[in-house]
Length: 93
Image 1 (cartoon, rainbow, N blue to C red):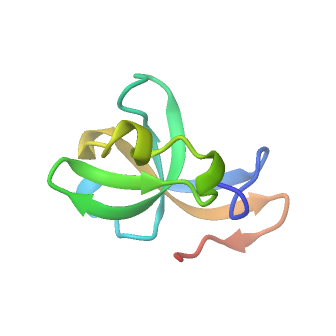
Image 2 (cartoon, helix red, strand yellow):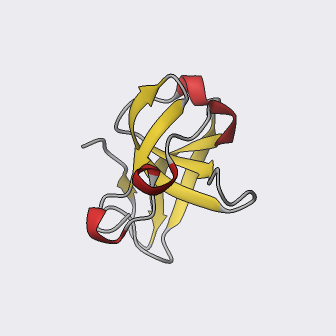
């Protein structure tokens, strides 16, 4: 998710259901083709099969372009704040 997020960032997240997500928000979700593997991606758009998610760095992101939409039940939370290493609000693109 660079440049928005980097390895080691500490995040404050709010638990949600997939239907409560808005386009542009960063979500915490389970990757559909790797059960139990948690990913952080930007919700791009809603499809009939769930959320289309993409990383902010398209050149090196494993996202919906490779595994398709994420079902609502696989979306766990929305990222609200990065609080370490420096406080900042997460914004939509």
